[in-house]
Length: 146
Image 1 (cartoon, one colour):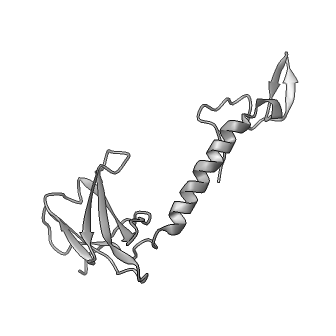
Image 2 (tube, rainbow, N blue to C red):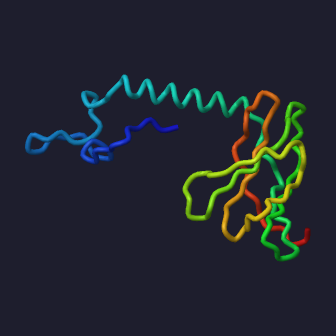
Image 3 (tube, rainbow, N blue to C red):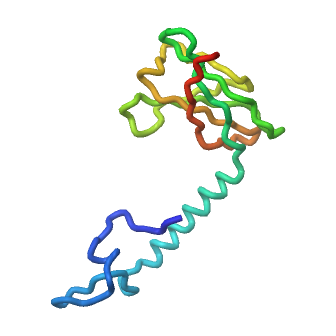
């Protein structure tokens, strides 16, 4: 875990603590914003708590790619937790930095993404428990034997 600020000042970090020409270099205590660090700690704690409540990441996620087609068929192994209610597929175009779409697919272990080609999109599968907690996304690997 790293506590940091969004606008880094390189004269304040990764430097030997020293003063040159009236400028202080390095990590010095008088430049620490403790209120901000406390907020970062709260956000990190909330994220960790959320992740700890979520089901395990789905395993065996793969493309079923024995034939060429525009639709994308995804498969995965069922989670072993008894409170898993189903799965969610998330996707984004290959040039996008964040997930732009999602669909809850129910308690199944494969799903066809109609009209979305694995050549144009990144896909991942999340497990969802009965309380709505979502696992981290699990990315597929190509399995040409399916």
